[in-house]
Each structure stands twice: as C-alpha cells, then as structure tokens.
Length: 476
Ligand code: SAH
Image (spheres, rainbow, N blue to C red):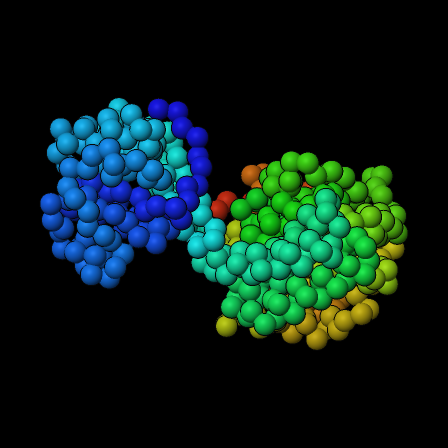
C-alpha cells in the first residue's frame, strides 16, 4: 500500500476504536497522545481501558457498531481480534469513506499508523508504507536521541511570537533568516536549557533589532572542522554548516566536513597551502564582512580549532570592528587529535605537567626565534611541546631546543595527517631530529610532539628513525 502522510484533527468528533481488549488498549493509548477522548465500541473493557474510562479519556459505546456509529468519524481502528467482526467494521468504514485501520491486516486498511516521535507541538511521523516496520522503529529510536526533549517548549514559544514577528519583520528572506537565527542561536539554546526568561529577552531584542534594520543582518560563524576525520566534527559544527548560505573553507578542511553543508550553500575555498596561491587574509576578512552585511549566514570553516594557529583572532577583530554578529564553534585541534590517535596523553601525572602549543614558523614565514617564551625553563622537563607548521623547520627547532638545554635523547613523535586514513607516525629523539635536515621525511600537515610522553608506548604502527650517530653517518 502506497500512502501519503497527513496529520488528522480530532476536534470535531472522537475517533472510534472497536474492541475492548489489549490490542485495542494499545491503539487507544496511541490516539490519546493527541485525541482529547476516544470512543470504544465493545461489550466490556479490559483493565487498562477501564482505567482510562474512569479517568474520562475513554467513552464506552455500543458493541458491533453500525453505519450510524461509524459515519463522520475522523478514523476508525478495528481491533476486536475477531477476524469476521474486524472485516465487517472495515467494510462499513470503507463504504462510508471513513479512514480505517485493522492491525496487521493491510488488505482491510485504508491508512497505516506511523511510528511517532512525540515532542508535543513537534511530531515526527515515520512511515515505510508498511514494508519495514522494524526499520521505522529504528529510525524512531534514532530521532528520539537526536531531537531535544524540550523541542516542544521551543516550538510553543516560537508559535507565541509568530504574530509579532510577522508584524515587524518583512516577509520572505528576512523573516526566514530571522527564524533561522532564533533556532540556531542563543535564544533557542536558552530555551532548550530551560531558561525561558532569557530566551524571551533574546527573541524580543532580535525582533527590535530586525525591525529597526528593516532587514536582518547576517552573521559569521567561525567553525573548527577538526583534523580531518569527519567523525571529529562537533554537533554544533554540523548544525552551523546546515544553516550556511555561504561557506569559506581552508585547504586543510576534510571533504567529509563539507558534505554537511546545506545543499544550496555556496562553497568558496580560500587557501591556504604553504607557498601556494591563496586569498590574502584581509581579502578574506572583507569577504566575510560583505556577505554578512548582505544578510547571509556565513560559515568560516577552518581546520582543527579556529583559535589555534588558525588566524581566527584576526578575523574576529575585523568582524567585531565591522559590527558583525559572531559565533565561535571550537574544533578538535591537530595536536589533540594526534595524541588521541597515538593513545599518548599530552599531560601525565608522572611525566608531564604542562603542554605548550607552538608554531614552527614566525609570522613572516621564517623559522621561529622562540624569543617570546622561556625555552630554557621548559628544558628542565615535565613539559610537552606540540609544534604545528614545523615540518620544514624541524631540524632548526630541534637545534634550538638542544641549545636551550633540552636533553638530546628526549623523545619526539611526528604525526602526519592525524586522524585521516593516510595518517603516518615517526618516532625519534631531539638529537636525531637536529641532524635530519629533511624533518624525518614528514609531509605537511604534521605535528611534532616533544617530551617524555612521546616515549610512552603508542598504539598502532610507529616508524622508528635511526639514532643520531647513524643519521650523521648517513648524511656524511
Ligand atoms: N587550526 C589548526 C591548525 C592550523 S595551522 C588546528 O587547530 O589544528 C596548520 C598546521 O596544523 C599544520 O601545519 C599542521 O602542523 C597542523 N595540522 C593540521 N591538520 C593536521 C593533521 N590532520 N595532522 C597533523 N597536523 C595537522
């Protein structure tokens, strides 16, 4: 049976369930999710239905219903568990054009009951045209987990403001944007967290702002896409991508992340491979501002975390100066992802008490001077250094560490393409790295982890690099 989903109103007349037993009770309970009351046609009522009758939710009417009892019903469910009687009721209903369902007898049905996810005002009905009820149940379980339990309160609140928004915010794109901003933003978040006064304040303020502007201004969401494995995207990042009109993304962002963008979203790649052509930073800032001012929801998608060596700070400054609304969605930064993949903790009670993220290049693109922090203080041990963008400067960095007093045998692990299918890891020590101008043969993107923790047992394959002496010989 091919079916078309609709939502039926029970306001005019209650639905009719024929049968007083357990099956009838199950169907009645389902109808009572929305029906104020249900009429039951039966000789007598089983325990559960009797309780519902006592509570006034169920009314017992005469058994073996005829034409008059069926006519005008929004729907009828025949659940007497007596084949002959169910068939008779179904025939009457069909003759009268009243929708009828007989559990497990598709040939006697003119409608099927969906699997339902119930969030009050928000109802999701799942149908598989009766082909795969178990699949429908699985989908239902999945949606139960995905949909916030307080979605109902949010929908009610939105319903309450609908008229006011229609008065104040121009219809079409501005209004759609307005509601998208409400559902994506702090107002919805507050409501879902149970802070209704805050949600009301925010919606009220948004309405004022929108009516003053005449049209809603867009906003920029700075989103961390994580290190490459799409499963390391946050739920918030996915939600931001789904709301985007335009996505500006970096080279390091994995394909899997981009797949989450709204199908209509414009996808613009803005760089940045080292040394390769890319859009200059001020041009990117200008583009973000221009699009947001035009009312678009702009996602600025960056590899890892936007605030770890991602120039997120500069974009933030520019957007703030231009008065653009901004939201930040953090991401899993490469160093953390590398450590997780290796199953090596960056801090560890016994061997490392601090962790320092450091760039292997200075702002001008040269090897770092490390003048901005006290390398010698870190040399005493108990610290982990995670170096980003350090592949080409690895040997220079290793030499600086040796000069600062780091012990030559201190373990180092380099991780290339952390969390991606082609992840590669190599282990060595500082002295060896210092003697290897090729930076262990690692290719960008890679992070280098310096510290005692790098000597802890790692999970998975790690290539061991020759000792310093062997390297010296090899390069002699
Ligand atoms: N914001 C990013 C870092 C951008 S700087 C983050 O938080 O991860 C670019 C540097 O990040 C690369 O040179 C490399 O050192 C590191 N990087 C990014 N993705 C990586 C990955 N999948 N594996 C290893 N290193 C990575």
